[in-house]
Image (cartoon, rainbow, N blue to C red):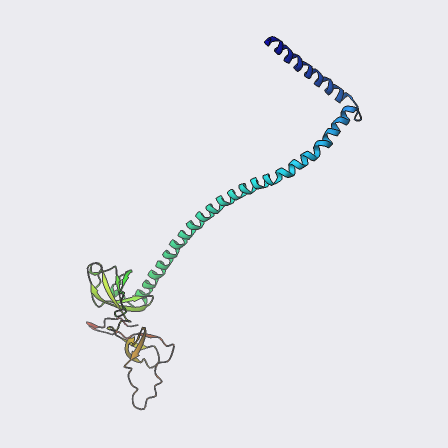
Length: 249
């Protein structure tokens, strides 16, 4: 029984192969107007609409697949760009900090050479704390007596007087700012008269300074007094061993 089924299958397969060979031989041997060619064209005409319809049906599927692929690629690029922006932002912050520090050191060097501060032995310091109250205007800096800082040393920054060292420890100093009500500075106006007075914080407005006790003009002398926009500098002095806490200018 089994052998009969095997022989029958082999016979059917051989018959199909023989028919295929006959059809191929007839197809290639016939003219374009032969019946087989006409059958082929008919089959193509019948199946062509089906193929076009299938293509239209599958087009959205291909579009969705392309959209997912493009979206994934775009997300990858966005993540890479975000990492690049973070790295460049960090590098910019470091470069900006180095530039500011360089400008500060250059300004301090200019102060040393232009104001003859070599005898004062300038010490660079950074502020790390400020008095939280409004009653006292003080800051703490990270330099002390171990670095050569002494009480009553003047403190300058950005080319101007900032305040005076009022307390000193080994590694920390307290600086009283010139805007504090307990501190006053003898100052003069850079004008033809050289008006001199005492520079103190304005009452009720510690962010402003007032130049008071200006010297009155001599009898018969015309004096206009300080004008808006004129510079005010410290009027320090040095006479032998005696010298003011604050250097001149």
